Image 1: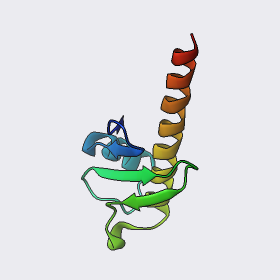
Image 2: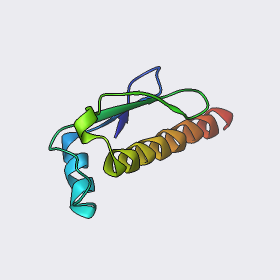
Image 3: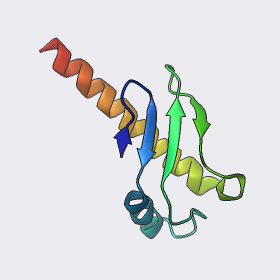
Image 4: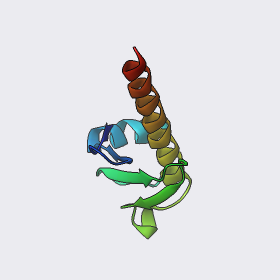
Length: 82
């Protein structure tokens, strides 16, 4: 996963989606990349998940993207303090 610089948008690559789908085969997600954008409170505010891909798989992937974002942001704050 990667964060678009100076945003809270997380891009999940096609390869990462494939690995996710291998562990969650009924996710309903397709073989493509997705992105999720969060506000300062961590709420999902935008995504490129098409309506027909939306469901528990997309929600779980969004949760993973949010966890990645939080971990990265906390790591940056920790590095800044040192």
